[in-house]
Image 1 (cartoon, helix red, strand yellow):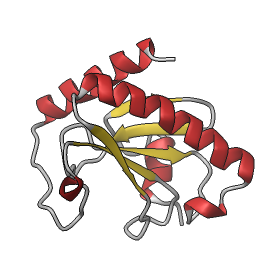
Image 2 (cartoon, one colour; image 1 turned 45 degrees about the horizontal axis):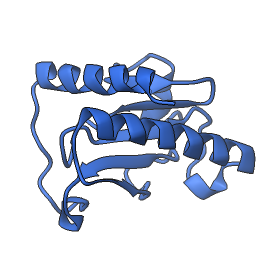
Image 3 (cartoon, rainbow, N blue to C red; image 1 turned 60 degrees about the horizontal axis):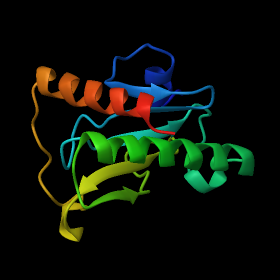
Length: 134
């Protein structure tokens, strides 16, 4: 059965897409820990990140690095925290979260509730920054 991320990749479910390339996609998390919390997802449906073939893993990491740079431009913060859990969706993915302190990078924290307009504004800011980073 296709994962929800595969359905997003295939355009069957809408998302707040920040960017994509031939192998990967980045979109905002709909239950964000912080403004700008997003997911970098390989287009190949593999359950766990470390099961990706080496070339696809490196492609995702290079993509995530570029997205993280754009995220830090668009959402001022001390760090971009990254987290690999993968328990909620059986499709490899990497969480990128703008943080100012370590405790902010925890799923025990209550997620933010943002309006569609806020989500679109954040998405556009990150996407615009992605166009300007190398």
